[in-house]
Image 1: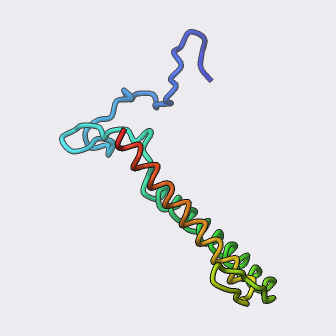
Image 2: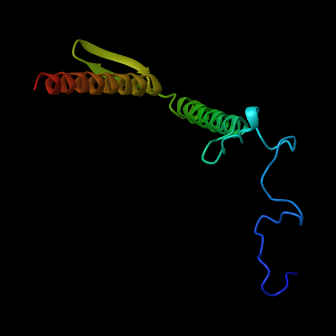
Length: 122
């Protein structure tokens, strides 16, 4: 407890010390210069923990997508007639859906390339 009128030391330095770090007390760097504060910097262990969490999340997402795809294949095994321009083909439903999805993604990717090329020429 402090007596009335005595200054309050927020750092809690013991009586008889100046509170300033001195040589040999382990608080100064090379040449007697205090090390730079690390406020705002992330430590190596924090980065490693972030990477671990990210990898775990990616692994969980990959596992979830794999299970959904396996269930998709298992529940879509019936054979369907696919009508093409030159004829009709009987194929499993899952194959027809995957081919349609791949063709749709290809058309979307090609259209984005065309739009990107148009923007560059303007």
